Structures are given as structure tokens and as C-alpha cells.
Length: 126
Image (tube, rainbow, N blue to C red; front, side):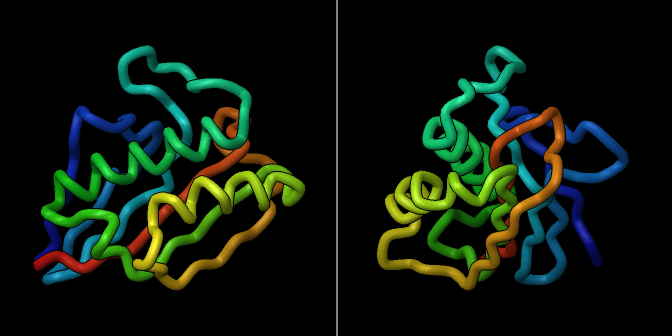
């Protein structure tokens, strides 16, 4: 049985999809972009600040599902420009530290609302 996960602490879906779906002890999160839920706007144009916001948004959805960043097993990072990889990776590394999930990073021709970064993930739920 699948359970739809939704929280007001992260940006709502801007299309026909859910913030996350939990199936058994796994939760699958849709990609998050750097929208600040308080303003509804991007935090800035800076890739580091955008990455921070994306990870805060993912954390909020994970929390709503009963998980956290420590339970993430796989992420996919989408970058508008692969030249932003080092700056994104520095922020990403602070959030995951010793808990390094599997990851794919790809350059995308265009991300929603022209974001510079989007990240989705899969996590386990206890």
C-alpha cells in the first residue's frame, strides 16, 4: 500500500505529482528546487544558497515521512550547469557527512522555474 506524503514545510508540488510517496519502509521523494516556503521565491541565484535550500526542503519532506537525511540511500542531483558541481558538492557534503548515499549527478538542459539545482532522493523509514 502506498501513502502520499505532504508537508507545508516544503514547497508544494507544481504539477500532477506528490512531494513523496511511502511504500513499506521506503520513501521516494520528488525533486526539490530552491523555493523558500515563507516567500514562495528562490532564496537567491547563488548555487551554494540554492543547494542549502533544496536540502532544507528535502529534510522537511523526509521529516514528514518519518525519515531524515541519515536514512537517505540514493540521491539524484540535477544541475543547470556542471560548472556548479564543486560549489554544490561542498554544501551537499556538509549535509551528508559520513552518511554518503549513492548518488548520480547530471546536467539538465533546463530545470523547473530555471533553478540552478534540483535534488530528489530515496530513503528508508524505520
